[in-house]
Amino acid sequence: MSSLAGRIAAGAVLAATVGVLAGCAPSIGTLMRDSLADSVEDAQDVLWEYRDQMVEDPEATVAGLDFIVDARGGADTGSHLYTLLAVEEAGDGVALTLAVEGGAETGGGLWYQQSTAVTCVDFVFPEAAAEIRTEGAACGDAVDVASYDEVVPFSDLQVRETVTAADHPPPICQCHSGGDCDCPGG
Image 1 (cartoon, helix red, strand yellow):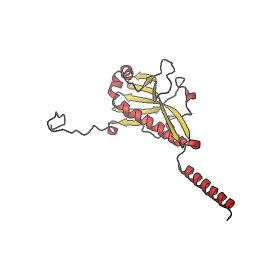
Image 2 (cartoon, one colour):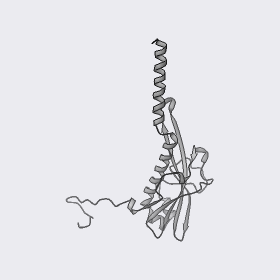
Image 3 (cartoon, one colour):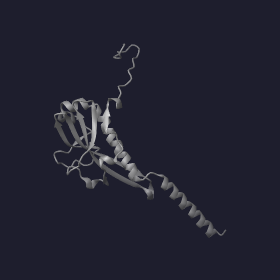
Image 4 (cartoon, helix red, strand yellow):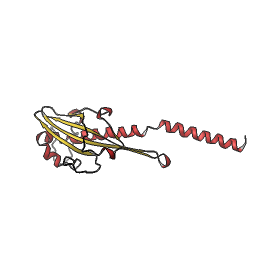
């Protein structure tokens, strides 16, 4: 085999290997949607510990949470993981509308890709039940959608729609010798 034919064969093998490896990797869109779904579920988890306070006094509770940026005044707050768009109090509970961000990076060098997305979600805190329901919401004008690569409808994400106490069991109680113990049975 001549050296030119050898180089062509090596190039073809390299191209085929790169093609196969690139075909096996998840797409940037899939990674970005997974990140966005994780961000929504992280919000559910972090809001769970404030569920009772949210039902009692949502405005004061939200004001004390440093991980939520309030965009209701119309000011451009830039890009944040959780941006508050609305608080609605009804007779049966409270709903927070949040814009939730996600993003992903893949590859490197010539194959580097980056993508960001936002979804808008109502986190509903019913007064009569120890749960948080999660529903899709309209983003409206408060979110600068041009700063994201994609606005993903909540219904397109694979997330829990209801979070209950079963999703957040109490920590295991452990007592140490010589210390105070709040465990049942002492």
